[in-house]
Amino acid sequence: MIELGDVQPTLESLSGRLDAYAKYARYYDGDQSTAFASDIYRDTFGRLIRSLHYNRCSTVVDATADRLQIEAWQDEGAAPDAPSNKAAEELWNVAGGDELQGFVHVEAIKEGDAYVIVWPHPDDPQRPVWRMQSASTCEMIYDSETAEPIAGVKIWRETMGPDKGYWRLTIYEADAITRYISTSTNQTRMPAKPGTFRAYGGDGGAVVPNPYGVLPIFAFRNNPQHQGSCGRSDLSDVIALQDALNYTLWSLMIAEEFSAYPQKYATGVMPMDNESGASGRFAGGIDRWITVRAAEASFGVLQGGPLDPFIAACNDLDSKISRVTRIPVHWLGLAGVSDNVSGETLKMLEGPFVSKLNDRAVSYGKAWGDAMGMALSIAGSVQENERRVMPIWKSFEAKSEADKLMSAMSKQTLGIPQRQIWKELGYTDDQIVAMLAESERVANEQAERNARLFSQGGATGFQEEDAQTSDEADA
Image: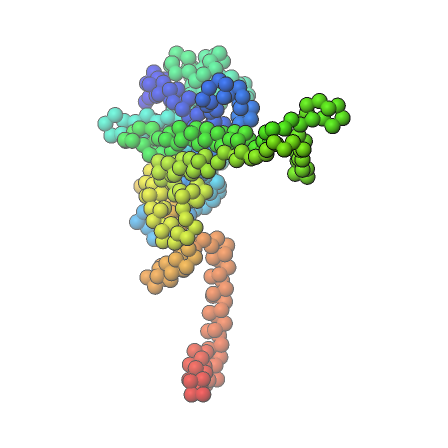
């Protein structure tokens, strides 16, 4: 059993990452740093450009999360129509899995880590509840030799109820869940020392049995560097480029404001006020002409400064963001991609991105499979040794409708069930049921028609078609 003192290194490690987690979240939300070259620059232009941010961080995260979508569940070694597959899909739909996976994948890609806790509903012990947990509240404890998780820790501050202001600490193990609460409400930052906690005395007591024999908390690591390590945010290499992109856009905006427009000038003449005769100003405008009598007067135009270098710099930064994240550059606004690039070339450009998605699917898929196993155990759908149900991901490759149909026809030739083929084509379960019912109705009508014609000594529907084709050929 994990003692309270054993989690101090884990809490200290989590506390040391809180600032990084907060920074990733700010940049994803568009709350980004405003760095100026000098105090004069800041004082002169700060108000003009402080709110301008060209947020590529959210694009990088969402582009990856949007492609990582679970479309079905498959019990390893079982047939596609196995009861465990159906039970898993029902639990997934009840849990709102399509929405849940979006939250989890965005959190993991953005912060580097995300967590899901699966536990019975307090009012229904056979109804599993899936709850996503943020990276700033959870951490896993791993075995030093096997690198297998042996416990999970969650720490958070209560914001309501009788424990408002207190910090709560829960240790999840395979046989029990142990709960603690801080001794006071004075800590504004997450406490890491065991002496600041005591056993929780609220509902259920300090120790809650875990009858399922597995950890109910599951870690989603984004690109971990080794076994048992935390993940790595996709934004860790983007933030510096995001700052450079914002600065370039600010420079573009200032150049547009102060030097992009042509400036007209006059020499050899002094504008005069017609009424007072004092020196004045030329009253220019799109509906005005300026005329002078002085023979030595001269007028000219100073052309505005070009904006193309700033735009080129922005596109170059888009390309750099594409390279470090493996997000296809045309997903960042078609920067550097010609309009006449073929579909096959675009597929090649997406090759590194597809490889990245396959890598993430391996890591996330194992966590989702373990979480589904826990949910199936809670629901009583499968036995202890039959819980390995893994997710099936939607294709990561961009395919045209023609490519999808050709693939479907090939799978039909190989004997893949029609229901599975239609599901891969994107049809919903209700649409598939309706199409199967319609196909069955048409087949029954054809069979009845053929039987009626056969009993009358006539040709079947197929024979009639062959005869009609023969007559047309003779004609």
